[in-house]
Image (tube, rainbow, N blue to C red; front, side, top):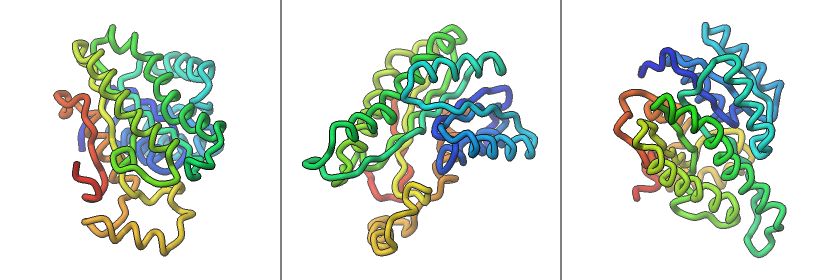
Length: 248
């Protein structure tokens, strides 16, 4: 296991799925973790689980699309932990429908949470990371950002935008020893995929060379690696965690 002792991490969208698993994995690796999401009850349960295992955690209930709440979240984090070393932008929503029928409010909601939210979260700690001359920023994209997917024009655009954002910020901050990377999960068993029909799941599985869906722990392991010192010479990259579904 990679060591993240004395590191402080913040994970958005941490109440369930990949975000929750990532918080647990980072804590197991030694990091103090702040967990952000809208569901305060789920965050409280997660914090209790982390603390019961001997870790240190802080719940920050909030909406990542609200600039004021993002700023307040960082103020809370700094008041408790004093710094931030690792930022994982995982929060995401979907509003799926064909582009022809997509309402502007559904387009805006997805872009605001998935892409603008990540931008807001990067802006807040960047000054401090530049001063401390270290940091890890990890944005959670998706395989559909690379392949496209019918009925998800807003979601695909937001996740593709995260890849562009990753590379732009990576260039801006590389001289200060801050790395910025993206992780692009494939089909992962999470609450977001749970409502899909078994027929659709079987069809998806048949397209994956490894023959199975990934787990949120698979994605969390990739995030822990990118957050570690062992990944210090990796920046501006997209790490695919998709079982071979996309090999671009």
